[in-house]
Amino acid sequence: MAQTTGGSAPSGGTRLQRRSLGVGHLVFMIVAASAPLTAVAGGQATTYLVTGNKAVPFMFIPLGIVLGIFSIGYAAMSRHVANAGAFYAYVSRGLGKVGGVGAAFVALIAYNAMQIGIYGLLGVALGSFMSGRLGIDAPWWVWVLLAWAVIAVLGVLQIDLNARVLAVLLTLEVLAVALFDLAVLAKPGPEGLTTIGFNPLVAFGAAAGATLTFSVASFMGFESAAIYSEECRNPRKTVARATLIGVSFIALFYALSSWMVGVAAGPDTMVDPKAMLKAGYATAGAPDPTTVLFIAGQERLGVAWGDAASLLFVTSIFAANLSFHNAVARYIFALGREGVLPRLFGRVHPRTGSPWIASISQSLLAVVVFGIFAILGLNPLLTLFTWLTNLGALGVLLLMSVTSFAVASYFRRNPEAELSRWTTTIAPNVAGVLLVALLVLGVANFNVLITSSTTAPLSPLTVILPVILFGGGLAGLLVGVFLRSRHPDVYAGIGEGAGPMEPEDEEAVPQEQVSG
Image (tube, rainbow, N blue to C red; front, side, top):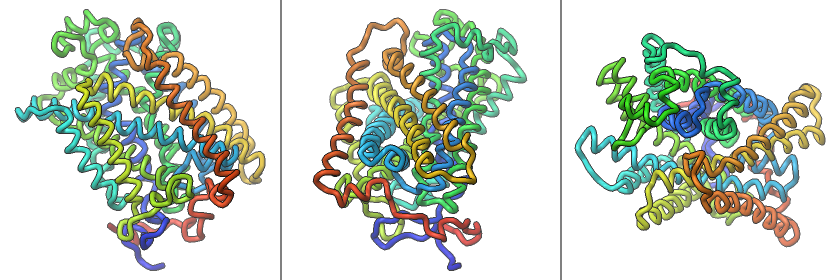
């Protein structure tokens, strides 16, 4: 076999860089998108205070089981479909091409919302670090522009370079959180090493729906392995292994780490604003649960850890942003290659094999959207980040629900003797039902998500944002119907991607033959 540099890249064609990614690369992509340090210090700590639930850690157990069941059918489907538009392709193969276009439009809205919304948090976090540690002050959007420029450049380079960047950042942030966990385990907070965090009666006794909805957002990105299936070595096995490893790691790591955050301050403190203020976990005179990990960690591990953790908090958000950018670019590319979007978006760079036009278009959309928020003077955390990322999380839940039933439908029409009924029928349908239940909880608690309060009055956005999401899916269905009647040639290619897997794609490329 001829040696390759970073996998084979097409010459300005419509095939992505081949055989570039292994299981390890994909696991880094998956976990980086969930932003471990950000999820633990930010999302999970905030969930305690907003919901008043002392058993946040327990919720990662049932969620991990649900998403693990989803992964069984999802991974089995990856043996048959290698397409950069994963959900879109799976739904097209399982529920029909019209449904696939509907799923594609939901995916575009959801992943763009996640990617662009994260810029709001990134701008504030980077600005806070630069001001507090280096004494450099600038508006949040200045820092966003700098990060945006780096992501825009990385987005048009080889995907294995992106994977290496994410691997370094992810390893460091996981190490920082792991050190925090061990330090708190050795020196618990004022209430001792309490196990109330894993009490199911407590977990389902206080705002359980809101707690589940908040917690599921920590898993966002775990489903992204299939998006890179065209760029994998041995995609029939790589996607399945990476997905199962990713969801297992996320569930266990977050259950442990959210428990240690609660133990560090004490579960009673974590759910009580007055107690949090008294303990010193505050910002500008207001209770701030996001300070618990950094304050408690620095008390136990020293100033050097505190400085490193603060920087890694920023790089954690950056890594998630880069990961979602790559996901969006591949969806746009897949739709352009098949003619659902203008075919210009379906071209790859002749040297790097990246979907460069799709990547640049996503970068342009992002700068326009966060630019509007900046011009209007809106709070980047309470608006840009909160509105868009929660819209994106709701969209991914919708996509996973539909995809589960699509997988079951596909294997019903294309039975495979070597796969069990559990894998092809029972697990996908069970996952579909459970994910629909989570989706309903998400919609029912959407006001809590966007206001970060269980007592806030109903916001108009509670209706507007879900309508945008579901309306986008309906628009996609109408486009699918239009293509079926007016452009049968385009319709016939929906969900087909680059075509059947080639023999060379089914064999792993020895690591020593892949460089760059």
